[in-house]
Length: 47
Image (cartoon, rainbow, N blue to C red; front, side, top):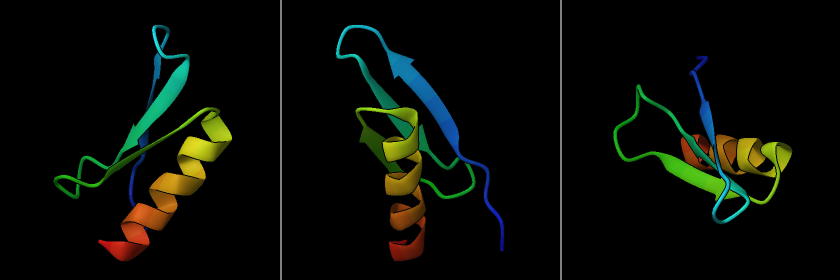
């Protein structure tokens, strides 16, 4: 099953937030887009 992951950059912390709108509360973060995306994939797998 595929899920949409939304990435948002926070210039204050210079990091990325990642969340999956289809899975309430499923979110993650990372210092780079790639790290945030990988962390979000792990969060989805554990959801």
